Length: 293
Image (cartoon, rainbow, N blue to C red; front, side, top):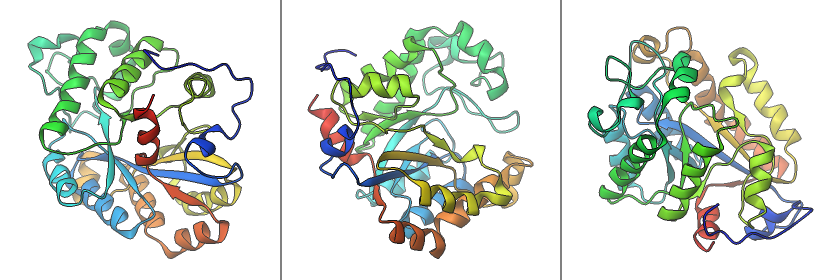
């Protein structure tokens, strides 16, 4: 955990609320739109969701083709809180991306075609990747954002399944600390470890909207809002427009993103959040505390 000041606590309940200046019973929620920059259909949906106001945070996929448009939007709208969606995995076979750095500098990050490994190849990728190369590429993605004059609030990552990979988690923590950013923290063991250093994180299991069935997603989101417990929760959502572009990129899966867009730009979502007294946040408030660590 670097130079973080650890405190020994047996009960961390309510700590994040206190660090962020809220009463312990407050129900706090970060709704973060992942994959900004992936493609035009995703960009347009995320922009419209941010403008609607329920989604108040997004994360940028710097290596992707449409990151230029996303970064221009962020430059023109500095009030938008955004993070760097550290990327070392491609999703499918027909639309792929690779590292910012020359392939020769990060050979264990790419397959024979020179692209990041796809989602199905992740176990093989994680088994052979050199951590020094992964850190170099992640650092390059952060530096690209900073060189554009943008001010990110946090780090998270695209598609990587990091259960048990404390070595990669250590890299993420190191980069967050070095660049003065907050970090998305997932899994109760990791949450408790980071909170023991008096840092704000989510308090509960992280929600990935891709795990919800599109046909019943709207009703499920409403149910989850009703059930939201006191403390800080985070939902990673994936808005997209179910058009020809997205259908070509994600055959059979574009409706997952459309369902997210439909709900988080709906009066029903706004009404439920208001009625439940849920406080919507972004990572900017967490970043302020992390920077003091």
